[in-house]
Image 1 (tube, rainbow, N blue to C red):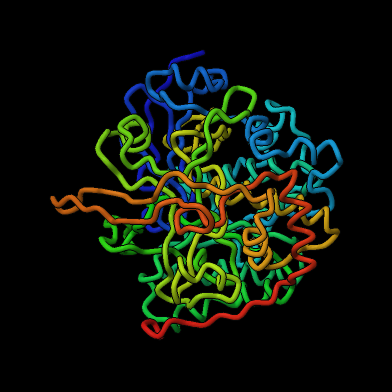
Image 2 (image 1 turned 180 degrees about the vertical axis):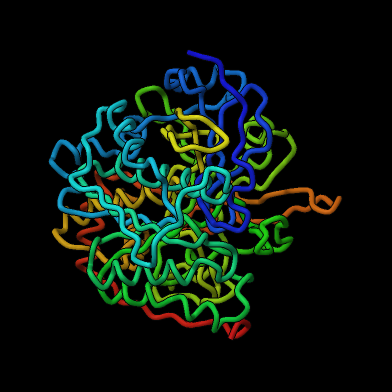
Length: 486
């Protein structure tokens, strides 16, 4: 099996909002980072380059990990995809658009290795474009590039694992996205190109920034054109809610957390579907051994040691809460008792917990060597849900566009394809400036909540229900801006 070596992806997402998390495997791992939203860092653990891929049981038994790790077959089973696959619904005829700064120089080869190991077919088409300008040459000594390469690996491999019949379009941008506006103009330009040429029906975004890091509402509004145009074009846009629970990075340097509740944009945008995170408990075949719960590993010494290199508490949970920018959209009218006058996130939640990692393969140069990495975060949840949407687009024979009105209508109707989550919360604690802080979030409860949204999905039921409901309720939405940010 080989000996695990300790490596860390250091400072990868200082201001970047990647949503998953990449940590490198080790006997005594130093501080690792997550890659979730605009400001989370990657936390992927990886084996040595000659070691075999670890099974779930081996991950749990490995002293440097002690955490379950799941493969594509387990996640496919957990989300009820096998009946859809048997019926030929694998995302065929669809293209999943993945947007990442810089991309990865080895993503084609890494996806081929991932597919070969898990007996997945190659995507019908895998294209890489750079519509906002040429990406600088990859530099393994540049931590942001290494971090985005890890994020790209996660996004591509897991979108493909969930919708193996879909094509993949990787859209790379030349400037690293950070808190506030840096990098966002290039992302918006690239997405507008994709939308103008209708290159795909679903866009997956594993990045974001604290709403408060934008200097003004006007500054944020100038960046919304891609979502407005996607809405008009009938394209679904997804965004991760982040990996820091009820808080978020307070500054562009991503060194301090907000001591008051905060949410990230673009997940908070009413024209975007916000994807939060859950913790799965699965056996080796992918069957659940316990109900899903809101992802929150803040208080787990084992997880924090694996991710951060210390057992001390760290914000390590699914993002969620109330927007300080957007008012309650019309599709959240039936949950007004929860959200009040503000837009609430998440809308839906999928696997993201660092206490239930997923397998990835990466071989790009950097502080670590090629091998298998075990990762987590809402950067994982978002491409997973993008794959589910691609299955529904195939079933519908067209792009579904903004699915939020349908999601809330399905939840209101208690459609069985939406599985309620009633356990867990996203309250987090951390030490900052020598002071211990706790930012109180929300608890899961029956129905919609600000920790899990409407819940998670059973894809075999969810996909046809989403298609029927979208046809019945449409995509119309009304929303506004809160006066405090106006």
